[in-house]
Length: 82
Image 1 (cartoon, rainbow, N blue to C red):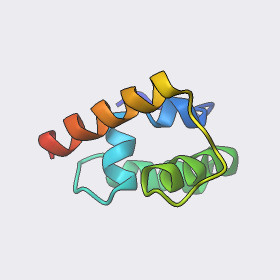
Image 2 (tube, rainbow, N blue to C red):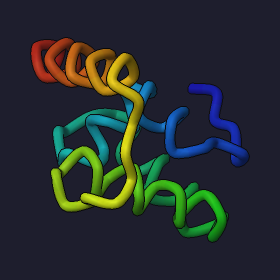
Image 3 (cartoon, rainbow, N blue to C red):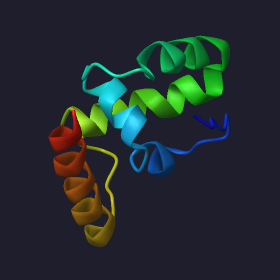
């Protein structure tokens, strides 16, 4: 697991381990994400936005159509893995 503390929302939405964490899908990385987000407030802010997007709670942050379709594919792949 190789975390970067300078992740952007778009990066988090491409990270299968973050997607599992955000959707409360049990994974080995969940506690590591929790610790990382506690330690780095800037990353936590980005993670809040990414999680809201994944949960359909953020209507202000718009992904380009191509990225939105890619996110859907990643979600389905992640859900199949879990």
